[in-house]
Length: 272
Image (cartoon, rainbow, N blue to C red; front, side, top):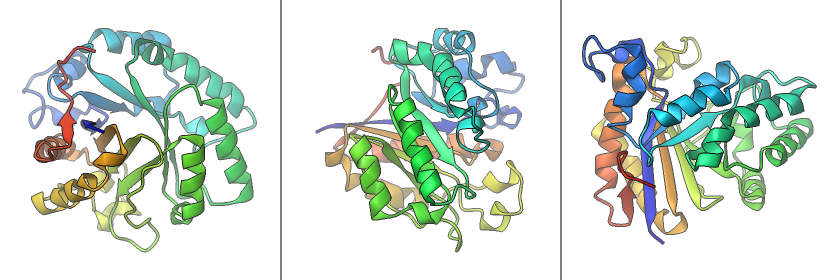
């Protein structure tokens, strides 16, 4: 089985990327167009803060090449601020991303749960119901609480054909250890940086202020090399967005993956 890798970043519309990533003077309205010349996939995270709408994502489709793909982070009402109306919220989310699914541009829906989402019978039941509700689309689940990173949970995801998200974090006691698993025919990897000093006390900017070294990138290239025969697709997203570190490291990772004979990196300009 040959493996195609889509490597990109978590978000693309950062003002501090003008200079490091986008040319000086670039208008914000051109960010996505320029990003899609460099990478073949993006992880949309605005959808966490506000529900995506079909009209907005349709415009994003029109502004990117046919071969470009989108991963969409689920709205916070489905992962962080869940209420009794979660089924309605799930329906609104699904309707909003429908143009991506219908056009074949949707590579995954990311369900990223916070540290406060504890491993409990109630939360396990909710997760199962949410996955069933969103089963039309390829799902990837990231747990921040280490108690979810067990063989039992991994096997449950495998039975539901839901992707277990592999993560790279700072090495802190209350964060999950690195675990390499494949529960579907696609793998999802997220790089959050290793800024342990700011992880618990920093904000959404300082927490991800980190640049991976060549050696740290090589660690993951070696790990991916061991699972390429198990998957057809790899999605790798860099979330260390401060001052364009994510774009720099994503480019590094993509080039290094290309040295693996079993991996073909997606060309952002390639047609379907």
